[in-house]
Image (tube, rainbow, N blue to C red; front, side):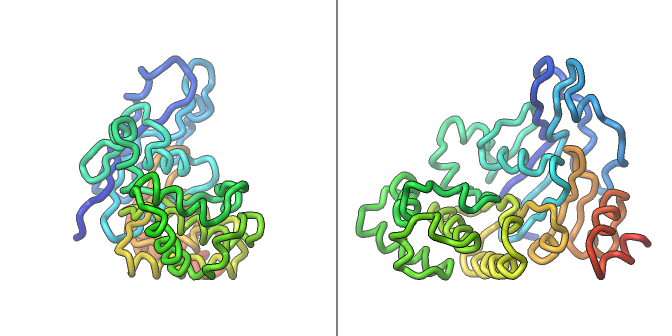
Length: 295
């Protein structure tokens, strides 16, 4: 079994309320031998921030990401997936709990050496055009991390940009264009190239194909699989689309109202879902999973 590159232990993220004192409650989702980690419960106070109770976007999440593999995180909108992703890359700090990257706290790295953190982990965002600076050419977008994180001179940057464009199957002359001149699929390829520019070990993909047409989704997923094989990358792939998660993931965790309710291999989750919420999600997928979800 491959080594763990990123781990989360009892991670809580709260907004509002009376402060940090509530964060120690409800740590029921620590790593457990069972695939099913709790039933569907009414937690309106914690979820919606009623009264002095803080809104708990992520509630006691524990997980592991293994090097060279893809962990899929699936759940409906608002379940805490994107909040968890932002904590993984150091954009948000946990209210309590800890996320470690290669044995070091992501929160500490973000505070002490953000450049080192960004050389290890990068993020690809849901909105390909919205995540790119409209005032900069593709060349400027791709050169920025090469200069800031690796200190490359102009000649080295030019060569590396050409390599990056080739890696994501875009023509070299596109580097002089601006983001608005590209389709959504092309813009997402540029976003992937920007992440690769840092030469990271881990890439967090937050709904990277949800804004794309189905045919373009397939092309981007194929590109991601090819890049993982060629560059020995590790992915955390976040999506509400179970069909997409099944295509790309090795392991899957299912999130509901900020908690992990089921975890397992791709085969376990899709062939034999144990938790009622997982079965509910699968029942909404047309075709082959419907009978399994109702079993």
